[in-house]
Image (tube, rainbow, N blue to C red; front, side):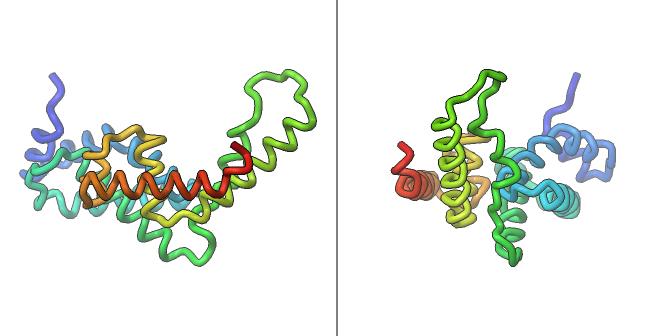
Length: 184
């Protein structure tokens, strides 16, 4: 029978390294994907993901179970990703490499040249609009839209109220809508 996260945390706090390895195994991919969604750079996401688990390992003794381990590790990951964005001199939210296939057809049917131009312009507008978001607005968009997390979970991860999450999400969507209005 598989142990719960809390049981694994307690074992880890008692010095069982294999318990932490199990937690890493459970959450490594999810944490990496959230960070990748925020940073949009694979190498940076790998680095921040490793730092997330290193920090979690160092701080596991102070984890008291007031929230789920999942929420706690995501909070560490998101905070480190936001810090990394702020430190970068280059544009921290460059989606260009990862959005190229977003609007392309899944099948090989010949496309209308006008539709292709429209899609390219939309893709470029989307990239620019996302690049203009603050790290906090980007975080709520990724956690809600891509990860599908609840407002409560996002609030716990970001260390803010559900109302703040809803407000940030509203303003992030409004900014995207304002920038992309001509395409809608």
